[in-house]
Image (cartoon, rainbow, N blue to C red; front, side, top):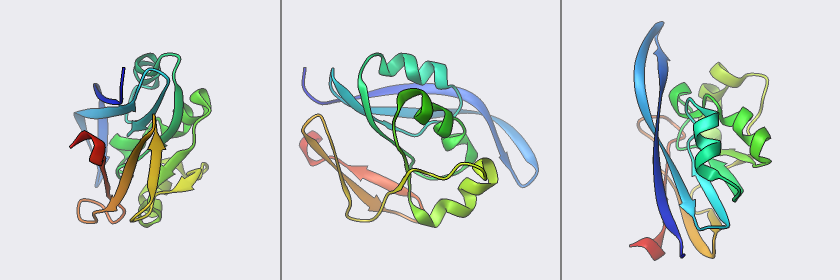
Length: 141
């Protein structure tokens, strides 16, 4: 089967300005039957690992570093032997949750990740967070 996008929703909490909220968050898997990129790693590493199955994880790409999008990223990266990637402008947010674990690499404007023979372009889209990024995959329209 060719490259595809898979969707998973996990539930947990989000803390902002001293308040904690119950939230659902999206996790996206881009890839094929052999390898994937995991986009965001919010709450439940077991659910994400189950969705990945026995595929190779090329990277865990974080759209931004609010805690409800990256809470299990370091643990998931270790479990799946995958690098956790984050735009450097979100490092200050990352450190609020993961001060003792640095991201494994950076996501930068114009960078291209390749998964399952498909190019995934990084677009820096600050606003919601200073290091927020979006991903564009021309092969998927």
